Length: 433
Image (cartoon, rainbow, N blue to C red; front, top):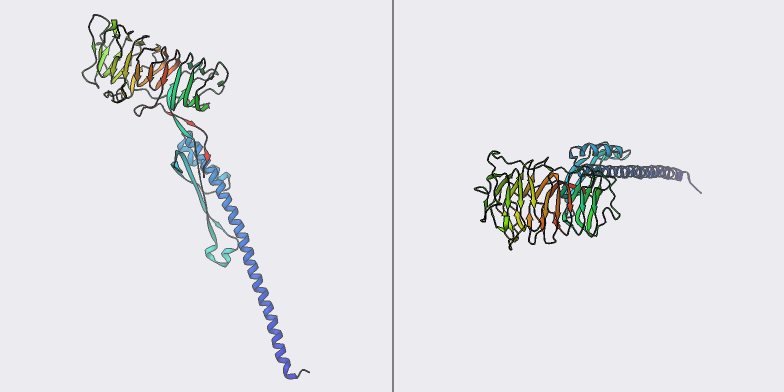
């Protein structure tokens, strides 16, 4: 039986219990709201992070594509546009990288960042009112293939390799400017080994017995490639009224050449090795206005030629290296035939022969038993014929209108640090991170 004195105590405990339930409900509700707020804002931040990553990926790919195409001034604008299309309004920060994970190439890193407002967390702590969101992506892989054979004919068959001819360009590439379907033809037991073959034509047929029927190895083939048009050397200055003919007469050797390797001498006609004579060709710069002819060898004469020479053929000049003319011609700064010494410098280092633009006389290089030529050959308006003789070692960069390589001749095409024919983008930009 309860006494009157017990009622206040019971009432007190009942009130305390009710207050505890209210406080517990408030705490549970607050914690639940906190978790809910955390869940909502966390989901928001994850979503914004995904948007940022998509924007960074798109921006990096767009900028890398512009870089690969040589439009570096357009990289930022394209990156901005693609980031916006992928839901990110802030302009990406771009950085160009030359290596990634130890691989040399062209890469673009795009980084996007901005502060994202939260819905609930800021109510609990003002430091959580916004969160920084950032993402980064790297795109690249569009490597460059330096061009070492540039054929500038804009129509028809620019390159014809047949009859056992071989074009070796293992560390560089060939670019053919013709827009025709038969722009480049390789068949009849011939082949090309090259890092790349770029053809301007989009209709070029690269298979079948009449086109690229090659047992060689072309690592990259690019159709619709940009045309090659390298800058030609500066023509040397000379006295046109003082260009005598030399060689080709008498029974004694002729000494050709200027007083020094960087001096200029002009000849109307220059006949080398006439009647089996071993002529002397000094290092220097030679201007030819008529004929430059290397005669066939006789009486065991071999390796008629010169080291450290540069020949400039004017608009009326013509070059012929006769079949059996065993010549050794080396551009200034290039390796001589023994491979251990370098020819004297000429002022046109790396360039062996430049036939003036507009001169359409064919350049004919025919084989001899021990022929050796090393240096860039520029004949942008002419056909280059290399033929006859598996022992003909022609080591040069080539710029010509068209080129025919046949009869077992071998062209070793390589790049030289002193001359440049541009490059071709090979492969396609891709995300690498």
